[in-house]
Every structure is written in C-alpha cells, then in structure tokens.
Image (tube, rainbow, N blue to C red; front, top):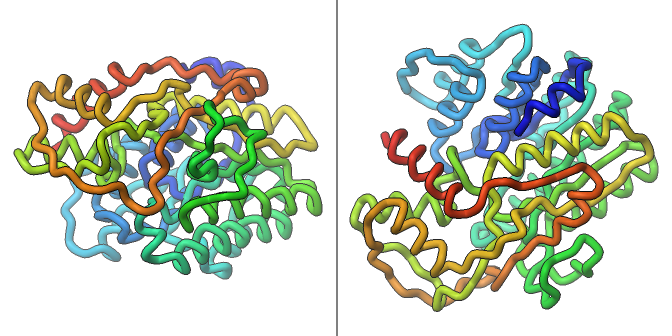
Length: 354
C-alpha cells in the first residue's frame, strides 16, 4: 500500500512526529523510517495507559529487537532513548505543554514538516478531566504552532477526530457539515484545534491538513478501546461492558488505511502551497456494536458474556465518514474491510499477550 509513496516522494525528509510511541504514531514512524526518512519522535509516555506498551511500540516501530527488562518508568525510558537513537531516529521524552523543552528540540533539528498526533484521548475521561484535555489538546498544540512560526516551519499535519461531528443527523458525515455542537470536552478540544489551526495558517502561512480520524483499530490498538478491551475480556472469560442495546454504530478504520491517508496528506502538503484542508479518514463502512461483537466472537471462536449497561454521557450514536473529498484531493483509498481487519487484530493480539 505504501510503496507508491516511496516512489513519488524521492526527497528524504526530516519529520517531527508527536505521539510517535502511541498506537497510530508508532505505525507512522515505522513507515517513515522504512521509506528512508528521518524521524524526531516526541512522546510524554502519559499514564493514560501502561507506559510499557509504548516502549514495546517504540522498539517495534524502530525494528529494534533488544531484550528489554523493565525496572521503573524514568530509567526505562532513558534506556529506550539510548537503545533506539540513530542517525535517522531520535526519541524525546517530552510533554507538549512544556514550551521550553519543545523549543530546545526545534532549535536542535532542522524540521521539514510536523505531524501532530499527540493528545489526551478518550471521550469519557475528558468529561472527568476537562481542564487536562484543554491543557494538552489546545495549549500543547498551540505551543507547536508558535514554534513553527518562530522557526519558519510551514508544513503541518494535525490529527483531529470524528468526535467533532457529535450526534450529527446527516449521514454520512461531510467536512462541510456544521460541527458547532460537540458533546464532550474531547470533541470540543479537537474542534478548537481545527479553528486555531486556521488562524495560524491565515496569519503565518503554515500549510496545514487537519485529519478527522474515524475509530481507528488494528495491531497495537490502545487497550482502553472497545475492540481491544472486548478481545481481552472474552479471552479471559470475563464480562464485557455492553452499553445500550447494541445499535450504536462506528465507521471502523483499519490502521494501515489511516497511515496511508496520513502519508498521502504529507505528500500533498509537500507538493502544494497555500493549503488549509480538513479531511475525513474513515472506511466509509458502518458497523453496529452488535455486529462488531459478533465479528470478534467469530474471529476468536468464542462467545462473549455481556454485562448490559446504559448509554454513557458523551457517546455518539453513529459515525459514518463521507470520504469523497479525501479520495479526490489526496487519492485516499481504504482497502481493509472490517472482517479482515478484525482477523488481523486478533492474530496480533493472540501473538502478543503478555
């Protein structure tokens, strides 16, 4: 899927990737390195989930097979930085809220383009910690734009989210739809990022593509997300939390298709000027919660034990991406249907249980 990017973009680049040790970020870093580019990875190894998962992601994304003995977080990350450092890759243990540390990184490296994936994620946690979400997702992102302004970096890809659509009544969701009614702090921070991004594009000529990701899944998926959580609980013969009657639906997008969309967005920015675009990256295939669970049960060969619960505040009823614009503008073309993607995830999960 990604060979076409390598052939088209023959100039080797120096990319700064925030959140490059996370689920999506580690896959992106892996593909950039395989294409011969240099990567500066900024990640704060947040305690949102086990930092050891991010260490494994980092080792895998840099094709590092070193034996890793976990001791304590700070020492482990320091060891990881030493193990993975190379001519083409540098990891920084850095919070995007801390302007001074970011500035040192920007000063040290000649950055061609920023791919900003770092964020506090999750709809439900954002209701409990709204101020933390504002600090990271809004102020942290503005720190990056301020430094891009200061250091003359003119190309920026930013992760937004399908959550900005809220309970949009029009199906499928289009980039031209009104998104002024978010229903969670997380969604509101992502919408704020889109608006502020346009300000920096307008005032400082930073070319930018904002990517609205639709429910990404696949190998290395975060353990708090439904497919991963359900798979683990089914394998352990535990009850799964099942919210509502199973009719809620998501546009599940396989990780390889998301990475393809990011790479093509990068390529488009590198070949065009005066750009500010918002693009949906989805599969354009809607799967209900009932269908998702049935597909998982089939892939695992095992039935789930459901614990029926009411709908949660902030949860949207349905997501469905209109990807017409992404197809036309960047040549985005998802290729992995939900059944095949689920099989790939289950194979990865069963082979990587710790």
